[in-house]
Length: 175
Length: 175
Image 1 (cartoon, one colour):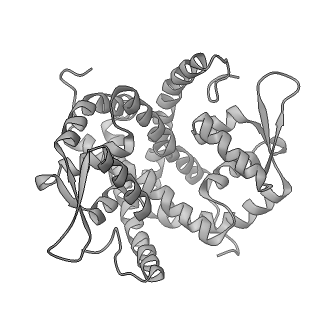
Image 2 (image 1 turned 180 degrees about the vertical axis):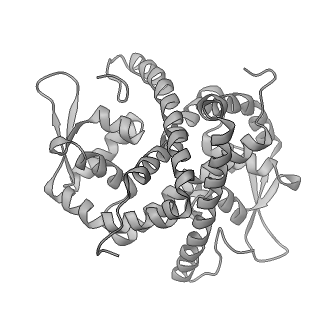
């Protein structure tokens, strides 16, 4: 891998640079909006929105990991803090050995309902209304293609990590 | 803003969800590759690559903030750690009052030269080779459009923050 790397061409480099705007810079701006106008951070919001879309507002921690794309330790720490603030509850799943169930609380539902209008307005302002429908369509396809690559690669990494730790639970691949 | 929000339509929602793959999930995968195969984190790499592309390998901290999209405090903490590891040097700019100059060191140049082939291979594997040239072209345009919105919004926020702190330096807008 260290001999003759295929460096990026000029158009590839331009795309690579540009798509980084969808990472840290966008996340920082949305987080700033949420903290200024609601009781939630961007990370809280991501977790709660996934839970509100499930049957009964409950999901396995592993599926939350897959939906948010966070590493296991980040997810675990963040859920602990959200539980302390009363936004979610974590329960062991008794019917099988496959780990924690995460459940949105009534306070969590109220917090996201209050935060949602301002957050959606910011998403529109910064992203959706800045792009054409055709650009949005291509973005959707491109994001899904990259997501599929990431899932494939992360599953390999999670398996390796689980093996290292001597356990057999992977946050984002099994089930 | 809290009355009748314009919720996202189904195609907008799909694009919004998909483009989040370019954020935390992609960053985590690239960071994992770098940490496994080099002496640098993804954040180190981002800083060093910007510096290697400038005349003399030196840049104002404010311009680095603009290039990375990081908030001022994150940038400052990260540069301090990189300086302690010998990857960059920070010097006060004596000719004017506009803050720190950040300079890549020979050790920084060597570290990024060693990390680059593996990092580019991962970028290709996860993103570039997973997309068509047409998708990359549209991604470039879309990322640049969102970047322009973010710059406009961040400049307003940075001005407000500078006013709050009683200073007149904004990391990402002036000069």
